[in-house]
Structure formats: structure tokens, C-alpha cells
Image (cartoon, rainbow, N blue to C red; front, side, top):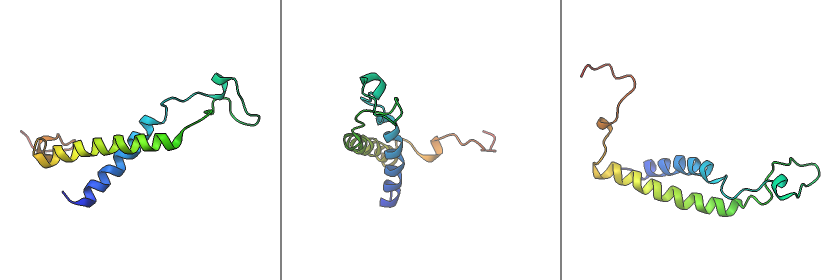
Length: 90
């Protein structure tokens, strides 16, 4: 497996993991009763984006390592995966 493929997998996994991590620990301004004038009441009070980026990076590294292991160990191969438009009778 090439380094470019690993980087591409990591990039995709990182963005997917980010959307899973973003809601962690979010409290809206309405929940904390501290609404800043001119902002949406549903906006987060403290989004903690740096902590979430760090958590996303660690989570994505672990998931990417698992995917790379699955592919390189031979546990799963491309032939094992069903293809949606496979016309072979089988």
C-alpha cells in the first residue's frame, strides 16, 4: 500500500471523524442562559475546537491504522467486497 493511499484514507477518515466528534460536550447559549446579543441562541458557548481537532486526529489515526491493517493483512480484499453493478452471474 502506497503512502499516498494511506494519506488519502486518513484525510477521508479525519473529516468523517470530525463530524462525529463535533457534538461532544456542546452546550448552547440557550442552555447556559448566556445569550450574546446578535447571535443565535443555539450557538455553542465554548466550542473547544482545538480539543476536538486533537481528538479527531487521534481517532482518525486509530481508524486509519485499522483500515491499513485490514487491507495489508489480507483479512479483507477487494474481491471480498460486493460490487453494486457487477454483471457476472455467480
